[in-house]
Length: 106
Image 1 (cartoon, helix red, strand yellow):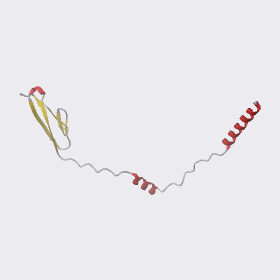
Image 2: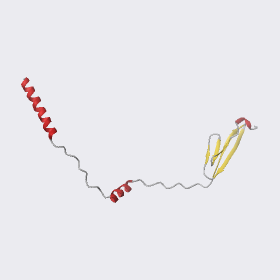
Image 3: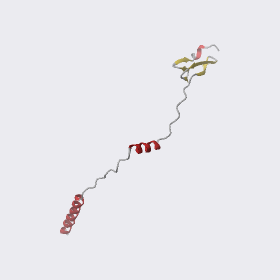
Image 4: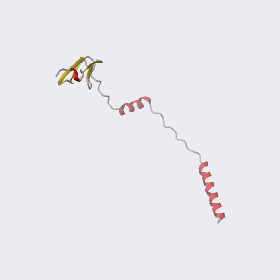
């Protein structure tokens, strides 16, 4: 029985050695595609570009602010950007704030 196990192990080791002794095949790169063909295939797969944004020439914003027992409206205008914030408006980088809540007469 012991001889049979040794013989099987020897056959297994020899088979591993035979398999590892076979020459390894390396992947050969195919012919390089022409540069123009390659670039054309890339341009076909690109998504279409979004249209360019339309430049804004003027803007104006306003906000109603709680003041005393009523509301006060603040506003501003700009040439480039206009934004409304929580208690202010900003136009071209200049901020106009709402007055303090208790500062206006009822």
